[in-house]
Length: 491
Image (cartoon, rainbow, N blue to C red):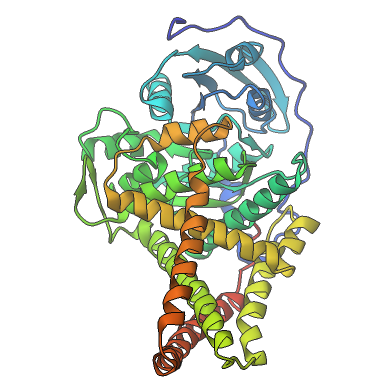
């Protein structure tokens, strides 16, 4: 195993960054206050230490480091912390190790890249982040960057500028999306289109809530080290991140908020993150995230994690889970009632039923139109209806598997399961909800045929109004979101 503090020899610095167009040139009126902050703040009065936890990131680590060295505001130091890796991540990252003198539109800047291979690490990403924190805790800010995240050239500049403008800010997240241009394969393109829409909706919700960010994602966020120290002190921790939670970034965001700081999302800083291109990988990731969120939401104590159901950062989580439950109920109930009605020739079609479908398509289209880097795939995903509906069923399966796993109290290493799934291994558990749905449908069909005509008619008479009322409420909520002002934000 390599020396935990091993660094590699210097390599040639990158080309100077090219000036890029100022995105504020055509800024709408709502941005004036934010622009004033950017213009009136001294950009170089703080120090930034960047930490990149890297696990088998050979395909992306070079782009990540180069993306940081192309920033208009380069971090003062960059630490690549490699853990549990079996590929060439360390070898590739080592090519960038050493000092770099870079000329940007803000002037001449200096940074140094260090590469640390900490070998086998039982705490995985959390252990790598905490190791990195120990190296940069003397800086004013810690910039956390995932090993597959490439930021826009001005991302660090925007994050730092807002962070130093208000001492109440404990952390700021960039707007995340996925670059779909390199994606190959029909299933991969479909999954990435769905994830882009999912990211866009989440980012937009946070922006419209006063830019209060529910989760300071580890993909690309900047943290005040003062806020990290206060959060550690308040929670009797020796490190900012703890291994007790499946969603270490969500838990830390809650702790920073509880320590009296603001958690924000930048309207301008952007970064492309790595997406999941297989059903196995996407399922494992979403189940881990949802399971961890449920653990934070659940009242009482689960192991060493205290549930905080009324925490302001968890409101969106509650809405998401309630929304998924409603979506599941409406779809399953509609299929059952439709099949029952057809079986006794009691089905009567009404064009009114198309209103919820149209509202969903329009809402998806409006979300797609808010994407700064939207393309034809994003538009087609929304307007064709079928892709978005299939993706919703996939998300429902994650929702069901997460709650089932949580309520069963079965101890599962969701980190390991995600890593295995991303490598192409793992079980076919992501198909279990579909198999169970088919089994339930068959069982209900058998039971339905055993019932008498009077009972069948009574079930339909009660069931359709219930589904109708829930659908009407869902549709009204969709129209509310559809006509809500987006204040010029782009995600």
